Length: 329
Image (cartoon, rainbow, N blue to C red; front, side):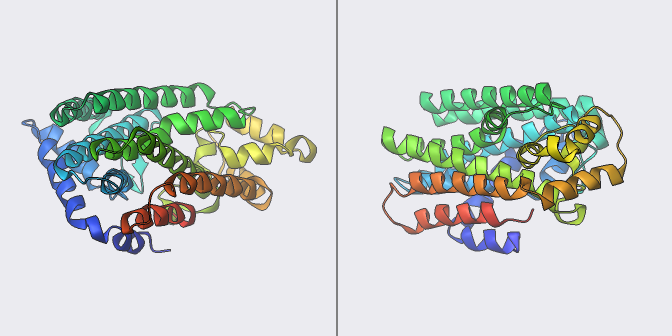
């Protein structure tokens, strides 16, 4: 699946507006400090899928399309997303993202932290200019929830007995809630009814959950050349994700439980040890059952979306569900 070509086709109807969002982001992110600008331009240089901007705009198209306000919201949420990625890389001590050096690797943790904070500060002005208290609350609640999800991820790192319930709580808080906020924010600005707003929030939440599950599957099934990080990278960082949770259900009988527990407790790992667990997860039921869960979340997203009348924009949101399920990186 050619990710770039697929998204170019899906986003053809909003391409000009996506470009305006990108341009406005760069304008709003400009600082008088050279080093901050350099760090910001590096962060912006990493290619993204622009799913969150597309969700905001497409949700806004299902009612009255108010692009001037949607533009501000799109930039705000893209800044929020980028700030969380920058801070995540610091917490994870990551030196690369999608195969490129992280901001903290090039400029140090202090500059990276302040760049993330700088983006968060800039979003406050963008949100204020929308002049809708519902958006104010949506934004503040979303940022707080993402922070809670990140803390939960840190607290559960290395926990071999992580439950599915906790995994889903973490996934909804850290990843899915931002996509849900984008689609809900688009609905609010477009003048949607309260019921429509909640339906689009549900759509974004289930889509975001499916997105993260697929991301966790790819960590076991794809290699560094495809996803920009080595297979089993989550395991190296002590993260227990859904494919491993399912695989571990049978582990006491096949002897892998103790092997995984040992790996999770170590700071350094041998590649062959990680590869053995990756192969075990992919050859067993871990990936298969996780994929079923991703499809179940996708079906719930589609169910929420189908409450809206058929339209070209609804079709794109529908196809985005298939894109999330079929992507390879």
